[in-house]
Every structure is written in C-alpha cells, then in structure tokens.
Image (cartoon, rainbow, N blue to C red; front, side):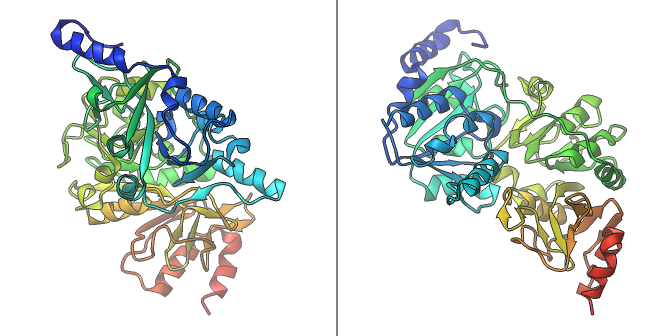
Length: 444
C-alpha cells in the first residue's frame, strides 16, 4: 500500500481497512439475483471481482443479473461476458467494443438473437442514468491503494464511476497497486466503501496501431489547423495519435479531453503542453478516463498536472466552451451530403456508440476561436465503399447543423454557412475520385 500508514490517522484507517478486507468470492456473495450491477469501464474493470461473480453465476448461486457499463475489455470478455453465461447475465451496454461485436457475431452464427442490450445514451448522460434511472444494487470497480488518510482514487476510471459508486446500494472496490493515484475530483474515502478486495495485476494496455497512408494524410491536414495555445480533445485510434505526433513543436497547448490516450501523453512529455492558456483548470490536463500503455499510467501516477473529473463535467459543452481555441478531433464512419455523421453503425448493426462526440463538437463550436474536426478515410472495405454517401445507413451521431470541418485524405471543407447544395459539392470534392461521379448524379 502506497504512503505512510503511521500516526493516529493512519492507524485508524488501517483498522477500518482491515475490517472491510475480504476475498473476491466473499465480496460478491452479497449480490442477490435480479440485481442491477454496474462495473468500472475499460481499464477500471475489476478482474478478480468479475471472475468471482462469473464463478458464482456459473455455479447457479445467482441469476437474472443486469450488468450496466461502457466499453468492456478482455477481463470482462473472459468472465461476465462469456457467451454461455449470458442467459443469466443481461449486458446493458452503452458503448460496444470488439467484445460485444464478437458476441453478436457468435449469436448470428448460432442463429440466435444477440444477447446484448444496447442502451443509446450520450457518455455525459451516463452518470445521471445510473444514479436516477437505474436502481443500482452494486458497483464494482478497480481503485488505487488507500493513503494514510483513508482516501483511494478512481485512477484511470472517473467517467461515470465516481457517480455510480455513490448511488449504488453497495460499493465493492478492487485495490490494485498498479492503478495510478490520480488528482482532481477522483477521491473516494474508505467510509464510502462496503467491501475491499486486493488484487495486484498489470493494467490492461491497448496496443498502438500504426496509421494507414490515408490516416497519415488526414493527420497532416488536421495538424496544420492546430496552432500554439490550442486546447485539445482527441478521440481514439490511429488518426488522433498521428495528429499528436505532429504537434510536438507547438507551444502552450492545453488538454481538455474525454479520453486521455498515449498520443496526448506523449505531447505532455514533449513539453508542448502547459495548459496555461486555459480558463478552466489552468496548468492541468483535464480528462475523464484514460486508456493506453504502461508509460501513460506511469505519467498519471501521483502527478498533480492532471485533473480527473466525472464525465458529466468534462463533456459538458458549456464547460468545454469556457476555454478558448478548443480543437475537437473525432472520427466518423459515414458523412452524408448534407453533413450529418453516423459514427456508430455499420452494415445495419450497432458498431460502437455515440460516446461524447456530439458534446465536444458543440463545445468546440462554442469556444472562442474553436474548431470541431470530423475525420474519416474516404472509403471502407478496401476501397469498395464510399464513406461519403447520399444518405446515412445508420443513426445520426452528429447532426448536420453541428458538423463544422470534415477531413478525408483528399482534403477538407468547412461546412458552416454553406447551403445544402454547397455542402454536397464541397463533400464530393473530398470524396474518393472513384465515387465522385455517382455522388454528383444524386444532386440532380
């Protein structure tokens, strides 16, 4: 356990800690059948608790569980999201990852209905959903070790976790010494915890992906739009990391982002980020969850230049817009000729979720000197399908009224102030040449 545990305060906290310390198997016995459970998302998944819960379900000791979460990773896939358990665990997922997509493919191969209950919700609304709409019985999450004053932190998983922890009837934490101790609105006192489980395991790491030639071309264009002093929000994937790699010569950049990923962490290490031009939390990089590699987690640990806050604060467009020069960089799957974006649906199926894209599109647009940038390679499926289309084949993630700058490997256009026909003509110009003629025919 980190920190000095000596002194009267430390002794009292250690005694309370000892009284609440149980095995993972003991901790989950309190979860009844029919319960609504939420788990920490992504890197904050609690592996030991998930395994103990899966074992209990498999043994027939508990059933009819409703599991609420955003963005699962491998620990959940191997335990509570095993296909053979999904007749007793109902995943209420608010953002699909490769884990749920694999489950849906297996269901299709079996000729069965997909056992995933997808819940459409903006990431910023998740805390309110889980605290006001869902009768949460239990929240399980990984936290950093307790200090001598009795405080854990939510580490890389503030997001909806800090709200769910305080709205659930029961809070079970999995203490992992590898979880970074993070500053900001990320503190959790031992008096708020019902049970403590200890489990030392390296945090999940997300393998970096090299950008494709098309993504590299997009990154060059986007980087050219970002000057000194910009306040950055970057999504996940090859394009954001490639953009960040091109910004290391900038000065006084700021960070106010939903996801803190390795690309932004590298910018911090380069010295390009100072956060001194920001209005909110000057001098600190603001995020709501982090996911990446060991170097990122090490940078976060005990570092007061980072500030973690709940997603309903970080993703609030009114809060985002207080900072000048916000540049929001996000990816999409389709853009129609009016500028509407589908960023979550592929070939008739839910692929991911709306996440926080629209919040940052609107926050950047309302920022003084801000830019909202939506990126996508011009084609999919090895060049056989255009991503710029006459009409979307899925839901609207970012409405046409909100879309500002769209970038493909063939260039960029700013749609603000353009008529429908002008938008269509501008988007056709940055579509893949193989599809431009067919797209133009749709204009009449």
